[in-house]
Length: 208
Image 1 (tube, rainbow, N blue to C red):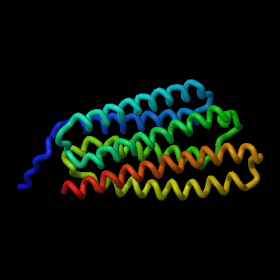
Image 2: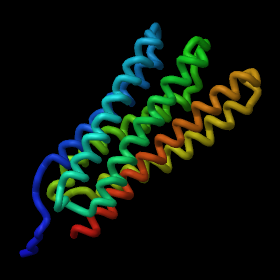
Image 3: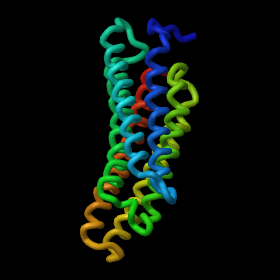
Image 4: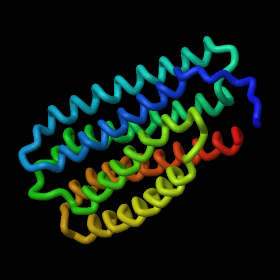
């Protein structure tokens, strides 16, 4: 039987879980932007509120690290995981903000690939939220990081298709520039989810 001097205190795991649940709220709000008649300003404002809540969770996490003598696993990994979860939320908020500020939701239709990217992000968010509570036992996590990496590859494929659409001549040059910025944030969010999954894998290997 493996013996560990590390504490089993649940505060860190609860903070990671709350942060991941906020990512689900974020992707659900992005999905709302694609609905007919969506109140884009309201969605953007709610997304900002969720992002602020995520910032607060990150601050709580850092404070907890600094006030805890022995952490459940390496401090550097706790910092990194908390920071990466916050990074995802920042990218999600940026997508909603840009769509609203640039008035892109007023177009007759957003590119199909943009909706597909948001759907990939939604799947990654739900996977991440389901995985975070399992950090406590470090069990049944492998399927999570494998699937999250697969979804990142799917996101890359969709992003390439989106870029082809943008430069096909279907949109005017100014709209292309605006959408390209949104596409970059979508890709960054997808990559950030993969970084979270890779960090969880690193932690699980160290603790095994």
